Amino acid sequence: MLKFPFELTFCIGAPRSGTTLLSSLLSEGPTVFPMLPECTFITRIIQYYHDLVSFSDKPRFDAYALSNEHLATILAPTIESFVYTAHSHFATLAHSHLILKDPDLSIYVDYIPFFFGDSKVVCVIRDPRDVITSFVEVRHRQSVDESVDSLISTVFNYYWRVSQSELAKQGKIHFVQFEKILTLDEQEFLALESYLGYKIGRTGFQKISFQLDTNDPTHSSNYGNPIKSNQLKQCTLNANELSRIQDAFAGYNQVYGWW
Image (cartoon, rainbow, N blue to C red; front, side, top):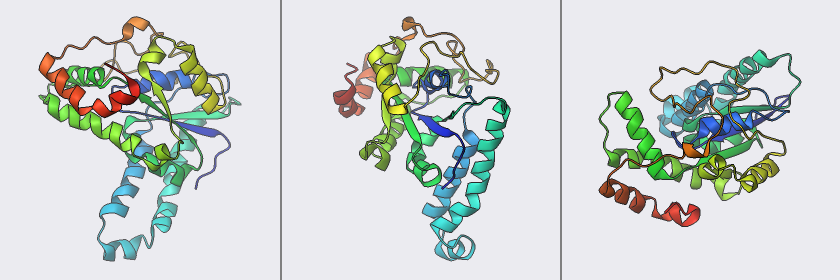
């Protein structure tokens, strides 16, 4: 288990759910380092660990990895180096909290305590109709033709993997509703701060350490701008597509009440 002289908070959630906005808000607090790009390099090492543990043939695993714990000791220094390299950009700041954000880490959320101990984990949840609408727009910009049913499967997997994780079952993930963040619901912010133990922002993108890539197909026109309640997306899917999404996410709707 890795130890750092600062606390880590992980920001997760399905892609297109608002993880970028939430990460920027988490980074605005007075004790928090500026917002970093997605921690993709760290996620890939954790994914590599997962794949070796889950899919390796026994002879090779026993020969080179010995055990899950031994494999972790091999990979942990690389993860540690990535974290310290990111932190080195803020060497002059005496802050105490660092935010690491990546939607893909949602799939491997149960490995966070294995490598990082009792770090905080915040997951943003958004109306899946809007998530999939946003996905459709991104796929259009990527010139990729992907069916709504395929996108439903993709998005549902993120929701399911987080909600069925051991961390979630133990009550160690704090879930935030994207719609309440956009409408500046103060109770949602206060509940999040109570879980984190430190203040966060209410504006968005006020402390950011990198240049947003406006040419990236996943870039949103809202990135870099303060929160506006009219950022709430209007679904452009047809009635049949919306019905299929609602059927797939009916169980989660019982919890979050989107429709």
